[in-house]
Length: 84
Image (tube, rainbow, N blue to C red; front, side, top):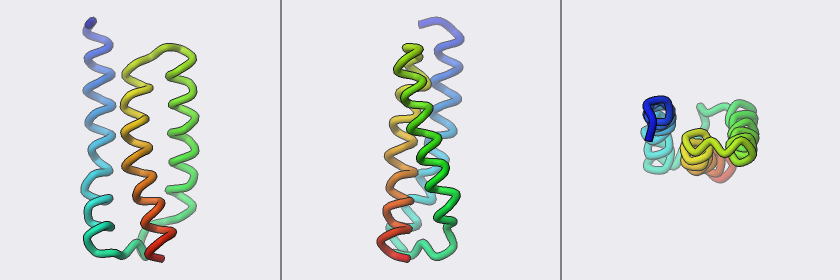
């Protein structure tokens, strides 16, 4: 694995795990009242587009990290719609 791929994986990992505390807090508190629905909806759509981009350009760091990001951000979006 080359250094650029490693940098991409590290960057993607750090930005992806930044969603974990919010997802856990929302799940534990069963409250998403302070979370912006519009922001997370736009963000999830953007992440889906990054996944599509990563697939077509065969960029593993972009593809993998955005798949995990979609799971975390998507869970926050789900909690927002469920817990209101």
